[in-house]
Length: 135
Image (cartoon, rainbow, N blue to C red; front, top):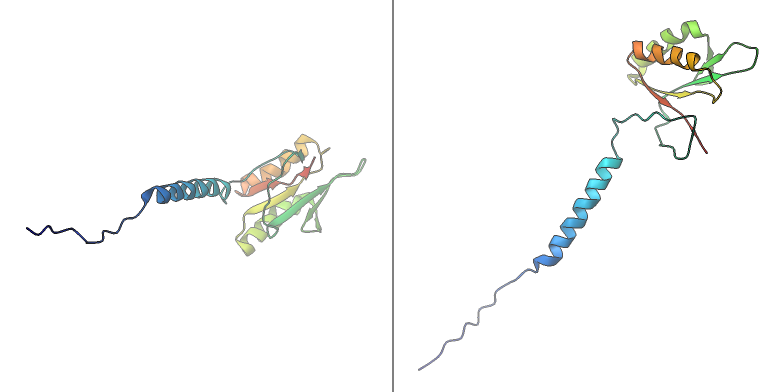
């Protein structure tokens, strides 16, 4: 009597290493997707321990405060009177289709002056990002 042995080769794949790799990839993409959300606009105080980065291509609006002088407003280093601020912002949005404005308020600006600027942005549906300096 002749006994036949099964000499066929069966390919096997070790799945334990693949599951570890898939778990690490899942964690990596989960962490990256929470960090890279471009639709989030963070507002921060003028002095913050940590700051978020934004594109420098957005419109820059700065307010300069000097004691005894009226506030001076600058759009990308061009001096603009407060009365023309709304119109100039609207023109910029129409021209560039970019509704995000980086606002640089000094730490000693009165709250009412800040609210006046934010009301202009609210009426035109602009997204304001308040620039901060690191503590």
